[in-house]
Length: 224
Image (cartoon, rainbow, N blue to C red; front, side):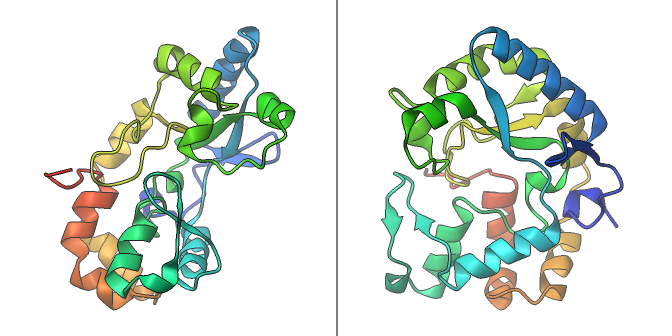
């Protein structure tokens, strides 16, 4: 099985018993966290590796309305007002297709400033406004913009380009992630999705080329 589809976990190591990453990614994250702590920032992971099965579970719950859908401005969407195609695009704005998530690779993480979030007393939602002033993770976001590259990390969803919504919390370890991107096989992804019998699988198959370009490769809409 191919690592990038999230169906093989043999390339991963545990990180403090709560997360899993590739060993090189773990080592560089821990170095980066130490540097952030020296700057007064409590850089911690919200999530790391996510398997294909886990992504399928998220997908099913969102399709069934058990998890909320958000618009680009972080406002809640009433899913009952959407047709199936609209629901599909609303989900993909913030949730990857199973098999198409960077979290399958062991190179990508979501991060936050744990201490400032806890001190703020807010219910943390992992939305972009929390990473902008006066949000509790705004200082972290600024620090990452200036320092993450020193440890090999980039923000692949730094801004919205018509595909995935802006995710200032999402970091990718570029030295390995760039190699994985070159292994992408859209036909293998399509087969894997169809074999999983996901909700809306026929709709995904019908629009697969557009969805792959726009949301898996994050090339977005040309007029976005």
